Amino acid sequence: MMRGAWVVAASVLVGGITCAPAVPRADTPPNESTAARAGDERPVRHEQAADEDDALWDPVSPEGQRAMGMYFPGNYFRRHDAQDVIDLAGWTRTNAAVIDLKDGSGRVTYETDIEILQDSVVNYLGDAAGLIRTLKEAGIYTIARVTCFADPKLPERHPERAILHFRRNEPWVSWGTGGTWLDPYNRDNHAMIEALAREAEELGFDEVQLDYVRFPVDEGVQYARYPGEDDTTRPDLLIELLRRIDRAIHIPLSVDVFGLAAYREGDPSGLGQDLEAWVDYVEIYSPMLYINAMRTWQVGRPDRARYLVESGVMRLRERLGPRPIIRPYLQAFARGAGHEGFNPRFIARQIFGAGRGGSDGFLMWHPGARYSMFRRAMQGPARRFTPFELDEELVESRGGDE
Image (cartoon, rainbow, N blue to C red):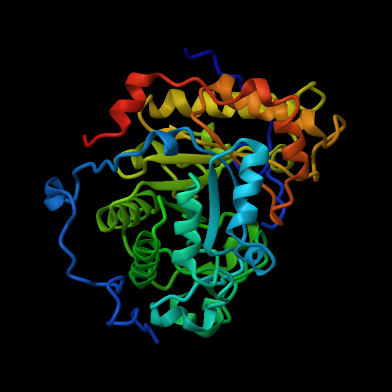
């Protein structure tokens, strides 16, 4: 049942709230030999997709709709294997794993066939298909995370793909992320992201999750130039990308978005993220609702982290309606936890807020995949809050074609 949303009343940088950074988290086409190559004449997968404006819906399994899980960076698998993920899922009573395929450092964590990314490969996953197969056999819902436009590696090697400094004609560096960015207007970059999504499906992942599918908005953008810029609006450009990817793959598509975006209709901050307009192509939304990143939000209020999650999910649900799956990222790291401290209760209250707000599941974020506090929460105060109760008719309707 929908409850009234909390009102956000603060003022500063983006949309009225100070957003602190969360914990860190030549046009060579992809290799022509791979089925994931850009420009591949692969048949359109939906009959109705002959009209590019038609909505597409990829069925989401009940496990995917109820997914509760954790993020695992690629380098986690230098010292750990599938069994470690399975064991941790068992201890935390969760069923999902988010695994980097292309991370925020620009590293590609598996052996890709995409030619332009060959120098970005750091094969942390080893036998990626075998890893995913083992996880799925153990009942783990697998999500491939693909970082889109924030990339501190590729623009240095291929400045023709990059956002450039408007005077120096070299890759522009964001004041927010501290790294370079790919030009969202460059359709070759769209083709590369599509190719990554196709390879994720071929590896056996259950879902593709896009991160940094946005424009940079820090104060340094006053010095940025977009070489590929045309008359397309930012929201329309990102819809074009999402449509392209959704037509290319047969598995659900999810997006990570600023927690603040849950509260803001349209695209007032220039991110390009018009979330209501994405519902035709995106099945799952993951707002990053970290109190660390919203430090001015209702300062002094007890249980702030819980209410931030609850009101953020509730507001997003009111805007998007019942069909899209909302699966927020919750804070599993200590930084910015506030006077209430980083402890099992801090995590449990976020989970409680997610359920109260109308979330379908949740994902925990720790940049180093250190989840001992989350484990303690799930074995203690959070036990009674999960799994979330979902409407079975809605679950069934989401599992079929539109």
